[in-house]
Amino acid sequence: MARARSEERRAEILRAALEVIAERGYRGASLSAVAERVGLTQQGLLHYFPTKDALLVAVLEERDQWDTGGAGRSSEAWRLDLLDPLVEYNAMRPGVVQTFSALLGECVTEDHPAREFFTHRYAQVRQGMAAALRGEYGERLPGGLTPEQAAPLVVAVMDGLQYQWLLDPGSVDMPAAFRDFLSLLQHEPAP
Image 1 (cartoon, rainbow, N blue to C red):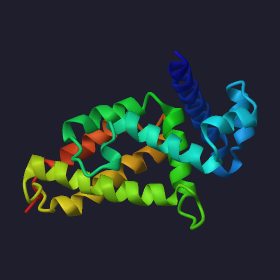
Image 2 (image 1 turned 90 degrees about the vertical axis):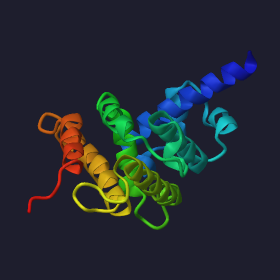
Image 3 (image 1 turned 90 degrees about the horizontal axis):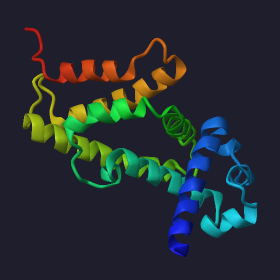
Image 4 (image 1 turned 180 degrees about the vertical axis):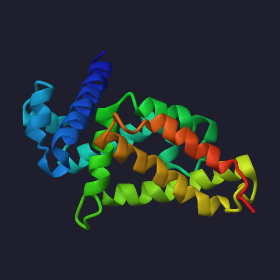
């Protein structure tokens, strides 16, 4: 019973951290603000996450688990048939997308604690995406690219659409635009 309550409290802290980071970015977020959201003292929060960096990594890992079942952090192939529903699902969670996007933008600075996470994550995602593309199309996509050439493009489209959608959700239909992109992968180039 105590373990279940502890897990529930941990999940509540992660949701609060997602909200605070989405609102303020990582550098502007504080442990005290997260603790306050869940009705804890900062000392109480430190019982679950001993540092702000540990909380950040837990938030990122939890987000990947929600979205990919862990495939984003492993060499497993992504499933192309699940990408469209994933984009659709993300369109229903603007706070999660905003948090991820804010952290991704911030982490390009050398001293950001999420830099190592994202560097490793993107290497694994590109590898998994290449495997998924190879499984779907073989060694060459209809447009002539290899899976390794196309993988970073698929990932860039997914992340780029998230930024555009966050900035102007009324003008960018993220799921529809991603479906349009997927249809491009299936077409032969014009002679």
